[in-house]
Length: 367
Image (cartoon, rainbow, N blue to C red; front, side, top):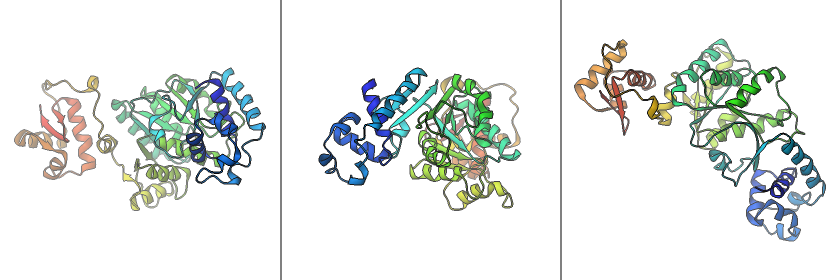
């Protein structure tokens, strides 16, 4: 995208009555953002769904003037711009009808051909939530996923710190411009995140972290990822909004259950109860449901290790597979009398120990 193109995309973003869905419709009809501003008003009104009130403010010169000011900020701070029609725009977000027409990026974000999950939850995360979140990221690290979150207090920063600890790329989706850090106490994490990931936002440098911006930002968190994981949430909260949006995008949603008396688990329990999320009790539920496979360099060697120590559950599965050869995961769970959520993690541990190997069709066999 040329600087001239970017200028008019910014100007279009600045028109308050035109959201991303309408903006995409106008760009599709006119051919470019610049063409919209040079089109006759009468012709714009012929577009299906475009009324007088929608475009009443389009032709004000102050939109281009505001865009010129923001463009200077972008150039002076080496900010990368991701336009929804360009190749560098996040692939999964392209499939979201209300995805931003333009994103601003800092750091070294790389979302191409990556496994991407979002981890969200309450800002008042409990020790239980922190422990599970850290365990989740650590155990998933063998699959090298990108961890997306909102860089907020509580669950968000817990997930992103865990990603850094396990050398995973992490992306913070912000509810304000890239000229500031919110909350300020998280400024100490900015450089480390930008080295191993970065930040994305649709908001200009003139935007403040207002409440409505956080709610709007949640669709980016949901849209970037193939799955959204809610660690903890009260009965109402922003993470539940993210889960609802993820469902609307036909993405997988997981929720960690808690005791019915725990306030910070009420939201997760409701997501599960109303079948808006899959129950997440073992980190290995995630790769099983998402059908992830280990990367070649992380797969165990084909030759079985000598004198491998197996846990009791692993011995049961090993003996069963030894007698019955190749079997599907569901059959293994049934015959070994183990729940699916548990057996997925056991099988992965056995694979890492080099005693079994996965085959196409969710089959497993002894090595």
